[in-house]
Structure formats: C-alpha cells, structure tokens
Image (cartoon, rainbow, N blue to C red; front, side, top):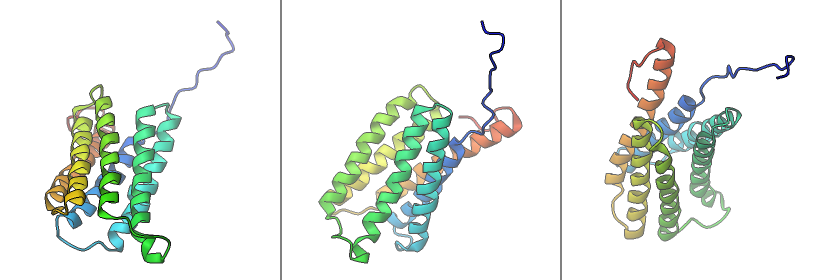
Length: 188
C-alpha cells in the first residue's frame, strides 16, 4: 500500500432532489393543462425550458460526477425531453418546420414510455418512492400516446400526470428533509 496515497471523500450534495423537483413541478403544471384547467402558455413553456429542462440536465451532470449511471441517464434524458417537447411546440410557430402530426406525437410519447418502462426496472433495486415515480411516468407517457393515436381526451392522462409529478416532488422533499434531519422524516 502506498503510504503517500490520499483518499478524497465525496462531499458534494445529492443532486437528485434538484432533478426530481425540476421534473415534478414541471410535470404537475403541464398536466394541469392536459387535465383542462388552463391553456398551454409561456408559464408551461418556460418551466419546460428552465426547470424541467436545464435544471434536470444540470442534475444529470452532477449525478455523473457522483458516478451514478441511473441518475445521469434519467435526469439528463428527461431534461432533454422537456427541451425537445418545447421545441416541438415552438419551432413550428416560428416557421422553423412543420408541427408534428398526432401520430408522430403518439410515437414520440410511446418511445419515451418504452424508455421509462425500462428505467422502471432499474428502480426495483432502489426506493419504493422512485418506483412510484417511474411507473406512474411510464403510464403517463402511454396514456398520452394513446390519446394522440386515437384523438381521445388527454384529461385522464392529465390527472395521472399530476399524481406522477406530485410523487416526484414528494420523493425530492423526502430526500432533502431526511438528509437535513439525519433520519427518516418521510419514508422513501
């Protein structure tokens, strides 16, 4: 053993609450729109770019530093999901391409549902709270895809999406409070 070797402890913060809150809050607000409570406006688009998009990408980069492949993959890709979703909505309005058809959006959402279902399998080795987040997100993507494929209402998906977003927010707050108090204040 090298007596001059130095061990450096990881003293960086847990980035998961940042990513989960970025995802959760944006998901709640978009899905309140899907449930029919208000229109799709710049509040949702701004949240999609900055909180759902950039905050999650930042959390993904921080997870990479912690050598957490699951967190890196999830937060980075879902962050870019939000940025791509905003682009799909805004680029046609700027004259930078055609708006996607309902079928194209259905496939877009179905592919994200498939990815999420695969990531759900990874949560089987993680907390119950994360299982709820990923399972409800997979269901949300498939419900939204179904609505696009059939021309049906997005209202059921909207309410399920509110549940999904709130579950992510709960998981984030539980992680923060449990760390602050040094004990399980909220179960995960």
